[in-house]
Length: 176
Image (cartoon, rainbow, N blue to C red; front, side, top):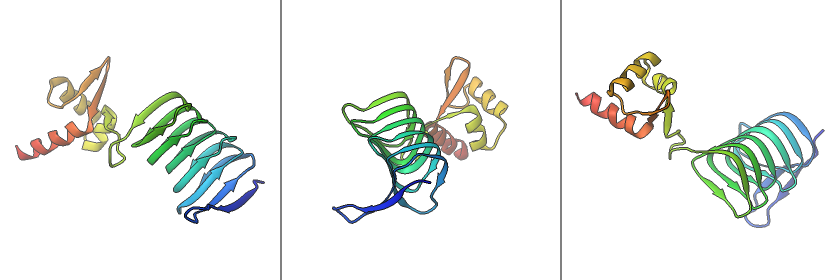
């Protein structure tokens, strides 16, 4: 069983739920909470509010949240709707997806970083994502891309579509 305790920050009086034990599984919070992981965790963390991975924490997980601060070790995919902050002691092996990333001197990221648009949307889409977005078949998207009808970028055999250019294209197509 995980040891849980609450602490109150000196400045601002925010309450934090701290987890200091080893846990495996899924933690899901539907309401905003300030959560700090100080021990070991393996599984899925799905939070609202602030999530802090302590300096001695070892986490192997898929993490989703709003604001995520990492001081310890994380292996996995981290997705934040607000921001991810890597403190100087952070060690991340995996993928970070967020509109805002702060990386302090000394922090280490082995993996990929994907920046999202201001509304939390990926700025690039695959042909399948664009097909779902436009509510057409993927083969139609491919035909439009190959014929030059759609603004697209070809990378080897794959096509990528920039969301902003697709939005402009849609606006102009509606006018015609």
